[in-house]
Length: 411
Image (cartoon, rainbow, N blue to C red; front, side, top):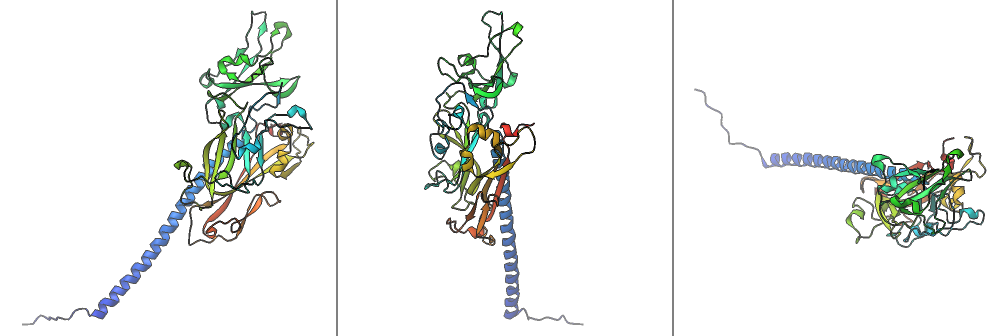
């Protein structure tokens, strides 16, 4: 009968230690790989979030720039009094009170678009030092319903008793009776003037929609004259009394204070020296901003203009263009802005995602603007940006052509 082989021999301590060491090495390699994969996935997720936010916010900014000049008066039939921004950084861009020795007919007339160049600021909670501030004047830059609506009134014809102009309606898009409006006379003395209509007796230039006639009405003609004039009625605000015969939005970079509302604070993923690109809508009630954050983690914004050379033939497509900084446009009259501004280029320095210790940005400086001397070269170290090497910096570029300026009207 065969016996069963039995032994009491097991694994030695040395064998157990070797096996455990192998397990530790495998776990360490796997954990390190997992950490790298997780870190890269998180970085890609934050980068994607940054790109989506950038697309949405900057597309809104582009639309506002393209609307510059919409419903804006080109001239005044008589002097009027109005106010604009009451807070920084917008106060330096106010046009009320502007006087032009070269063309007094443009005194106090608002320019459709303008900006400061490398603003000087000691308070980043107001605006970043060295950045630009862009102002867009247009009825449609506001967020209220009235600012997106308009209609027109035509001349009445005698011999009707006390004839009233015909006020046209657009059914669902009708202006509310309480909406604050302005009237624009598009043609005066057979010339395109977009003149603000002002009551010659009272000086009134705005009224509720249901009482527009207190501002003025188109002329009355006899049927035999075969004439008819029209005034355009632009909605400006739903109900607030107007301080400006237009709406205005300013774009600027600032770092909100920690005491401000949570929706306006800098996200944790952003470099601590960066700020937020804001759209500040100048309130009609008091000239203070209603702010909308457009893009986070921003260090700088630079604005460059593409201008037609004075005297270019606007009746042809053979434009003579040149690139100019904001100061050049600030020296132009409103009429020159309408005729010469072809395009606005905005350059915004920001970063994708958050800080990445495994990444090193390749250069200590970055160009914010074209390479023709306009804009500026941003030096991270000189501006005291902490850990700048570990962020994926990039420059967004917006190119927009305002559709309501003479220089961009289809010919």
